[in-house]
Image (cartoon, rainbow, N blue to C red):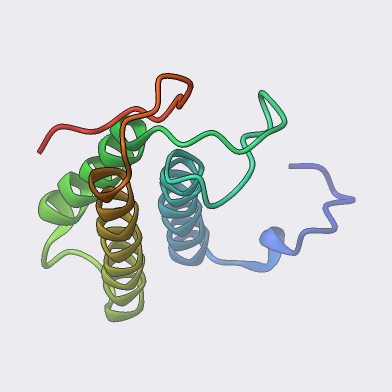
Length: 115
């Protein structure tokens, strides 16, 4: 880190820095899932593109992370992870319902995730 670090992370102790990195990891997977759900724009292609398989993979990755860290996280981080997973699962169920209730469209680029 440079001495001109304006992010403020240099003022955090080692535990706080690790917690911040863990939160950033959760947020990265959340953004990947939200892109796959078609909720936010994919910056790589500069458009909204729904890919439920990719969204499910990101959600499943967070579920695995939750299982492997069970009992080892501070209350705040555990709550943040659980809240993120709840939000993603609800959004996934909503998008999955939209796909199953809409007629098949040959021009639709939606990828459906397997359960």
